[in-house]
Image (cartoon, rainbow, N blue to C red; front, side):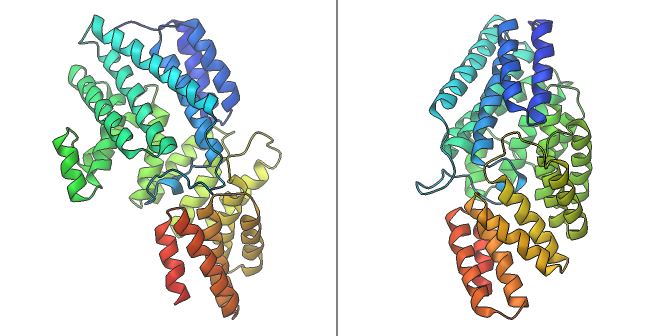
Length: 377
């Protein structure tokens, strides 16, 4: 195994911390320095590519758990307010990830039984799969890359069973395959994927407990999966740990509020969201696209659940006025419709529900579109 330059390793660790703290511009500079410190370090190029990918998803506003709970990824419509990915950022991502893949393949060609080389290759290709799904909206491209990433990290575990960090990709794809419809799951089995939800979750949990460079990636993945599995207490415990580690990441307060709301604890949700809004009121770093609308929608929904109608309506009116994702505006209109029903204004309620149907359906938020449509009837 070819060890990276110690300077590159230290810079990668610094850059990862900056990413998790939402200091994206600083992280970009740090990973450039890591590449300069060791141009043969595949991980440094992958870190640079990760920073560029996250700058795109941040710009597009799809970095929250809500974006991956029952909502299929698809490219934004031509009329969508979501900013397109900047061509120069896309090109820089492709250059960085191509170099990460090339260096890892070269390492494997020198020693086919080098577990770390297979890990680096699988991690780079896995990042390419994530990019294809979240930026390009190409499920076919993501599927092809994911299959190779899965195979490489299974090879890591075969060569070195102690490398629990490889379980993040293998476990994630096992989990995903287990949730697919039978025809798609069968096709996945045929091309080499394996399913098993419980095994997949366990592997990701092991990765979250292993001191590898993707430990916090595994923790963030578990926050999403625990929400999917309605294991809200487990998700909140991880969010508390992550808030301690990355106190500049305001989205962790947003996610804690959103998770509490899904758990039915509107009081805790309101507390997290109000605390986050106050704590980061003077944070002048760039906001995620639609972030202000999302904060206000979530707190408005929490206050509505608490029966604080006036406060809830004030937040929700702000949510629909701020720039934001159509599904966020749609859900805010849905909540406003429910408030109008409670106040006896059925005409206003129907207007809100119609707006919710249009906005949610247009952004592939079908469950909430169906709820608004049901309330219209």
